Image (cartoon, rainbow, N blue to C red; front, side, top):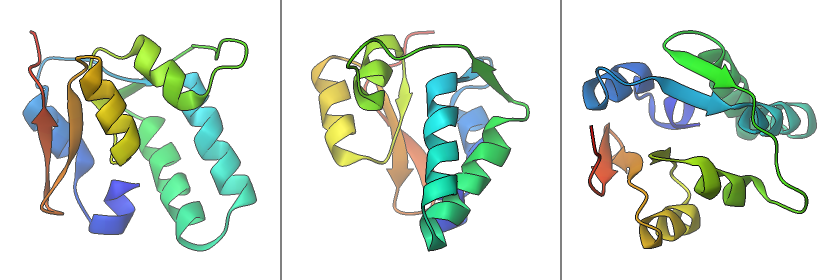
Amino acid sequence: MIPYQFRVDIVSELRRLFPKNDLLVPSFVIGELEGIKRHSGGDARIAASIGLALAKKPPFRIFEEELLEGETVDDALLRISDVLCTSDRELRRRARSRGIPVVYLRQKRYLGVDGHILE
């Protein structure tokens, strides 16, 4: 939702941080964005539409991943992520407490990393 809210070129910023890495999006995140697009209005709907459009084209690649029984999207992200991109403060805190590096928006202009990323 960052590209819509803050006019940040998320693709360029992620490429700056991860020039050689695959940018993967789990299928359950696509499902969550589709649900927001269908059931929300206003800014949330627009942001979800932009997120879907970005996720469905290079350099992003969608991979099939299912939620486990009773698992939330946030819990699944924590289970599968080597690096997590989020602006959700609680999810960011939970990821860092597990040693997962987090990419987040800094100063409403660019992306930064909280934690050490192994190459």
